[in-house]
Image 1 (tube, rainbow, N blue to C red):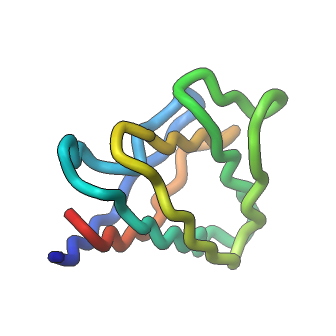
Image 2 (image 1 turned 135 degrees about the horizontal axis):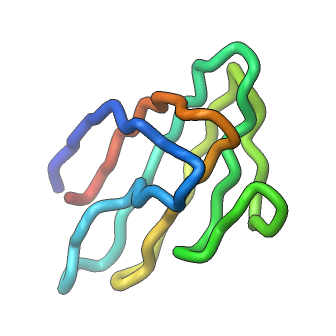
Length: 89
């Protein structure tokens, strides 16, 4: 398994945070939201700031394991950069 890191600019349109890993067993995504005043809303490709699966507050982080074929998206009210580490890419 390999690691990859990336700074991703998330906007008010759903932004893909996971990577393509077809055929692998799965992938762990670690997300850090360093913005001082912006909540990152996480979910599927149709995520919005009012319809989401998880709200990651500013200055917080989390990890999630995705099965093969699953994707994670994020959206914010105002453009924001988040830090991502992917394991299993």
